[in-house]
Length: 161
Image (cartoon, rainbow, N blue to C red; front, side):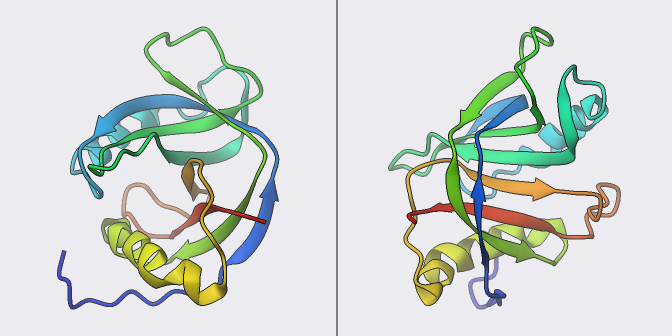
């Protein structure tokens, strides 16, 4: 990624979200913007709408269990009312009620790492929010077109308050 590119952020909205259960395909990623994530989504997308107990039509990328080296777990999944038994290899992420600063990512999906970087470098502090410990989420609704990578998504960052 070109370090001289500056991603502009719109003012985030604050959302209080109840508990979420995310069920999907997971992997451990060695660094931000891991190149394996697009193929992970390509494998998962065939399951959307086919998962028992799926709640709504939005898809989520859940980022959690980050360590000091920058390694983290990433699950592409959907919200479910309760975790189904199958497929057994799918990851299960239980997210407690949380407040989130919700940022819009309007560019092509390939530029999402720049939006995350802008959020962590200045987006939260510019708006007075303080990050809380918990999973960050990418939320993809009907506006997002997985074939073109356009339509945008929301980045939900857990915050105190």
